[in-house]
Image 1 (cartoon, rainbow over the protein chains, first blue to last red):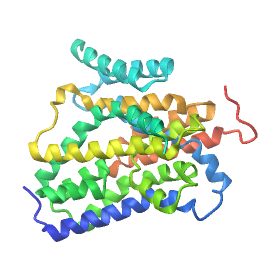
Image 2 (cartoon, rainbow over the protein chains, first blue to last red; image 1 turned 45 degrees about the vertical axis):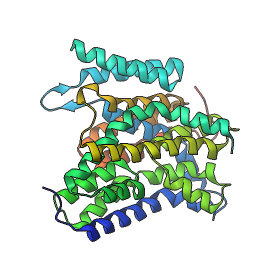
Image 3 (cartoon, each protein chain N blue to C red; image 1 turned 90 degrees about the vertical axis):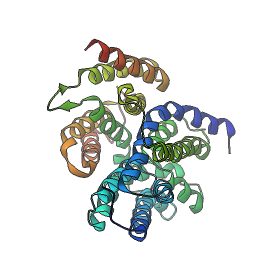
Image 4 (cartoon, one colour; image 1 turned 30 degrees about the horizontal axis):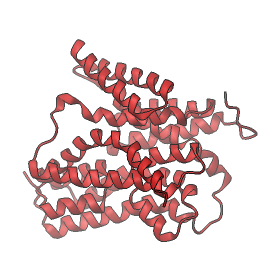
Length: 110
Length: 229
């Protein structure tokens, strides 16, 4: 069943969510124009954002547990192979190819 | 604007398109299911330009949730981008306010991830050109694939598991981001907490995991000197 909200309500949702999302994106990027330096404590913390965020983006897609089918072994193996290839090559494409081929191969075997 | 760096950004992001396309198509299908029109669907993708929050908003609209719930949910899902904004801000410092606003609008998980790894590894890259190469490619892909999903009403067959391409690209970026003991701890804790927090509402597992990872990194950090071991 589609929504019973009309175009005005939907348009308002789009506008408000868009505006607030932009405010989030612009927050610190906007701020650096006004202040000279970020506080040193914040700068120290920012050094760890890439590793922490990337791991938090990757892990839930690789370590997948389903109450019915259990642990998704194919994704775990593909993630392991992908990590090894990423480590050796430091390249996106080799990692992508190795990971996808492993995922498909593991899916056929399991 | 350095054209070579722009092209390199496009090249670096192109493997991601494969993984993003099904996600965009699903979002287009969700817009049909929620009862949005063609113009509304395009407006949502252009104005918000953030997949997970678009999907959540569409699902909540479909079930006629209170409008405040729709807005709050979509915005909380996007809160993680505060971290991206803070992390990438120093690299955009020298651009005009108008440019910084435009670059911010294009900030997404992959545009942040690819660019921050590039900016940190190479000092002489034309940052705006590289970032625009990555981000506009993602923008065009996202707009086209949501429209395709809306028009055709179907995504890519599930069996291909193309969406797995996205975490693989992030994985390839994660390895160079781990440069010492403290950032390794940030990654390990960030990943573990994100998996543990998968059941949390509003995609909060990602935000909580990343915050926990940063904290772990700070705890092991050696402010006196960086021991790269």
